[in-house]
Amino acid sequence: MHFVIMGCGRVGASLARAIERAGHEVAVVDQDEGAFRRLGTSFEGRTVTGVGFDRDTLRAAGIENAYAFAAVSSGDNSNILAARVAREKFGVENVVARIYDPGRAEIYQRLGIPTVATVKWTSDQMLRRLLPQGHVPEFTDPSGHVVIAEMPVSAPWIGHRVSEIEQATGGRLAYLTRLGDGFLPGADTVYQEGDLIHLALRRDDLATAERALDAPPPSTH
Image (cartoon, rainbow, N blue to C red; front, side, top):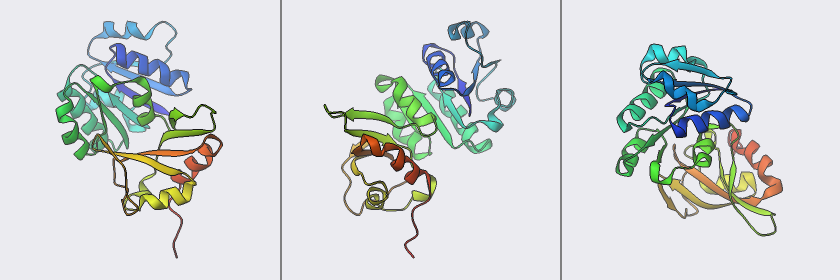
């Protein structure tokens, strides 16, 4: 997979190295050419000097073939603008923007762009929103047999009840995050675009559950 990251500060450099270690291709964009030193000498990805929301700069970074785009510069406005360009102009489905003002999170989420506020930021959170098949257990019971994991869900599940997700995966929905707020879903809660699913299930069933949610819902006919 090819990933494009805007911003080569501490966060962007750390994210780029982690994605490269996972075996993917990475291009990093920053206005300051000196910022790329943070990537270290072992980094083998592409570096592009320029403004991260400029279309020609994004093309030079390979945005047209990108699986995902992360905007993690130091400016909220630049991050959300770049994220919208990646999503709306280049059709990148997996987009995430880092923000400093948590009060803006709901606005951005309504635009269909997942955000990670600085005060809550961890590399795991960002990676879960970028990497394919990227479940990361958020909780593991002492025996190691049961986990709660944020699970990627394919677009065809939008509009289906979360009870159907439970039936397809054999797990139980621990909670759901919508527009940055977590809540306990009811039997009739419907999965919406941008929702984050946190599923409780046996560790051994993680891969099976991922395959089920990567595929369209089973036909009811």
